[in-house]
Picture 1: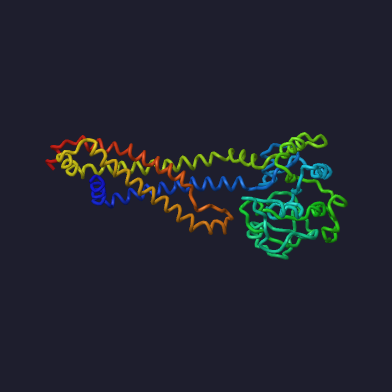
Picture 2: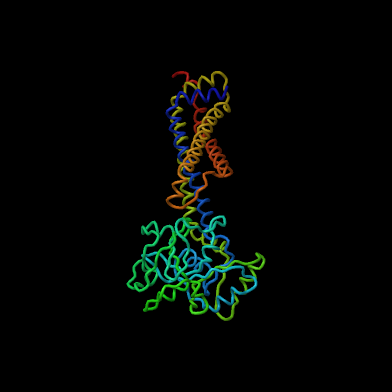
Length: 410
């Protein structure tokens, strides 16, 4: 009987009820959407680099090493000698290594000197390998591979010729015009900073800064360590055993021939996320404020409707309705409106994610799972329901205090 009364009462005020459900639905849409996006972005951020046990650079802070080696922000405090690199990677605990040399750019995008092992061992996400959408990896001195964002922003295609510039700024007055490179490969979009770089053979780093033109040769004819011993900005390491990672990190940090720093990427990424966590907190606060505003609007609507319902409530009291019946009636209305609005918000988020995910992945290489965490959704529903019940006491008590006589007189 109570449920029938609630439904009949809401139907008689259906326009106001629909508007209230809509406002709560939009609030829940924002709350669930922001929380889901926050969790997914954080997850993607922590998976910017995957499968790498250690990142090694010259002595500096872990955050700085992570920023310039992975996010291409900033510069190394010093370069690493080739002899030092060889000494470390030849240790028994090391399974593979990827050298990185930075310092040049092309129209604002960083140029990275590396080896073909970069495309073999560098991973992102859930240990996904980098793959080519066009072409292949470099095999000669004057060949370059483009990240997805570079090719898209500059409109470059396979076999296109380009020239590198000195320095990492967007504007450079020194160009390496004597050493033009040919595009031989374009990487598939990864949604990581790897998309915003150009990759050239490590041997070509030394060639760039020579005035005379060097003949283009196969990389197999000019192996590293003989004619070319470039200095490195950093290098990535993979260990043969996870147990040996911490010991290898300690040995590198205590390396006597040259001051070095070795960091665990996963720990450094989490530390970096804490620094930018203020934005995350701000989004959460705004979402909760929007939900609170919607619930207050619902309370206002219920209070405003009390004048119209004085006769209805007076009749109920004349029929013997106790205080708890009146309070329960108003509380059930508020709870039903909140649950319907919350459910609508959840459905809007789910449908939006299913429809928007292909666009996000295509244009931004950002994978946002369309499946929202039901634990978080249930928690939000519970908090909203409790808040609605508590706020409904205001109009419920106000309704009960109306005298029976004043209601019957109307």
